[in-house]
Length: 235
Image (cartoon, rainbow, N blue to C red):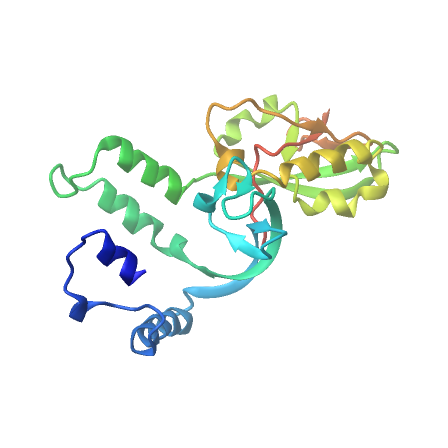
């Protein structure tokens, strides 16, 4: 790599070169990680990730091009993998406050600030528990739904869950169109998180037949859909 840069005529002070694989460098990244871990800011849990079945590795969203691995062209899957995460949500309020600092203090375009706010994703609302019943009207599970508009609960006409929601596997024997649901799940695994959450795109989904949810405010039975446009946070 150094020879390639030199051949292009790039002029650098090679005495100041930093090599990330050098122990004198990565010992500090390890030290930083340990400080985060000791303070409860680094933790391990299962979460969805882009997975290339041919390279056998996790890919960043930027390494997925048109749903395929940029290295080998294999279709990328969404796989639940145990991994290390940083608890950046603890700093959501502080990050949002800094984004709203007086004009001039943060010289970023408003579009960039809005993207950051959406990425931080802080949302205030309430969790509502829907009872899930089978065709025999017996309660077989519960479904917790988050909403920022609790006042609209009386007008709820359906519920939507993500393809990786545990409810699907738990109620597999109750779902009459499981083959159709399974096919939709398989297709959704080919999409990255960014593709699934992209604003303005056409919404897709499949009704889960054989079960219904009970609106806790009205007692009405409402259908339950599976959709790749919703995202489930694994706990």
